[in-house]
Length: 316
Image (tube, rainbow, N blue to C red; front, top):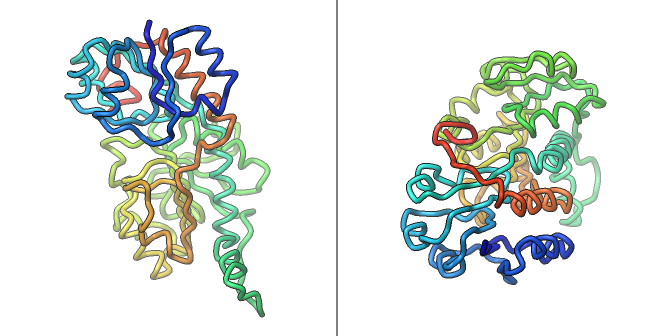
């Protein structure tokens, strides 16, 4: 099988690259770091049976131009950039593994809670401006607060586990019943309305799909507890960013931490300049451990690829 590797990160893991070359001796690798356009993807993958990919987006014309392509193996943690109906139309199988970066994202979620509630970003900005003089205000302890988790899949469950030593009240909103897990970890299942009303810190770990795009509207943000902190390490488009900015400015929400935005790169997004907004450039999975897991998954997924089914997890 002729394999084209479009994700440009195997050079950071030479042992993995060597392992992949042992399986597919003629595997083709990229040396640049930018995301391929559709035309560049077609040119790069043409003549190959399989592609090990990241988060490239595909239109009908891409697959129409690649009649030899029979497998795409995803290294990404999400699949919102893949249309299963389009794959079925062209007889292309796919591989994707859930939860490959769950520990890294969950750890960043915990760090984000502490950074937000302690106002670390604000205090750091004071130091950077050379304004260290006199009282500069207070943060708060995480201990004793109510932490809400919206979405308790692979990542959400890791967040619940990591929160155990912090002495917080954990409430969880998820469509799937998980009574045994919640009981074991002293967490409470609540409705979305309860989650918004009770959470001092609310962290989003939802997939991006038709039911979650635009979920956090202005009305929903208004239902959140006054003075709460909102954390989104999931996907852009789940939260109305303009409405969020207004509520950060008014003080209805005390702060927010976002790793994902509707438009990325998010350079120039006015949210980033707000003093109570702590923003990352989509780094939830940028640990060596997470990337090794994702690359290994994509590498071995070529042989495990299956026919994707629209409407069946992980698709709408």
